[in-house]
Image (cartoon, rainbow, N blue to C red; front, side, top):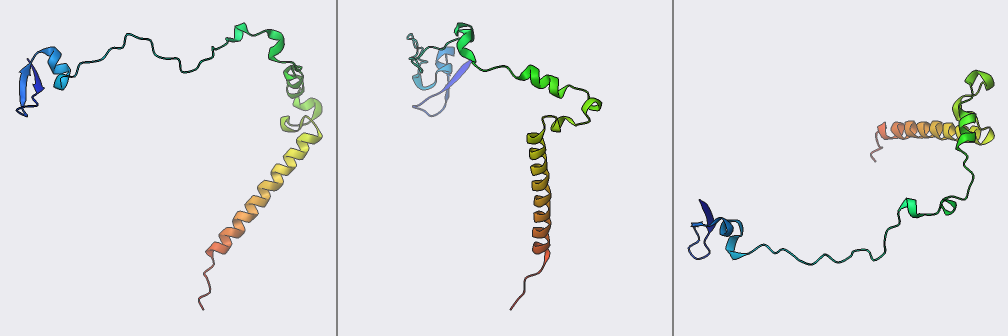
Length: 119
């Protein structure tokens, strides 16, 4: 048996299944129309695009793979320094910032640990 809430008596009363699943006489609304388009433009698939317009540059990946996959013993350089001066500059800048940041944190910790002068 199904029950529904009666708006008149404010109690549960027996009801049919359709009345129990749509309380207070509200009926489910099923739209027969298709929803409106959110985006007015159509989507292009990757297969629809011409191959010549997708990328006009040279693929550098094979060249970089040859550089990075060369044997460590052959040139004696670790992977992060194999491209020469730009890699050395980035490496040294990173190390300087790391050391500087560590020193700054230690100084800030030292200053925070000292008691304030009460005048």
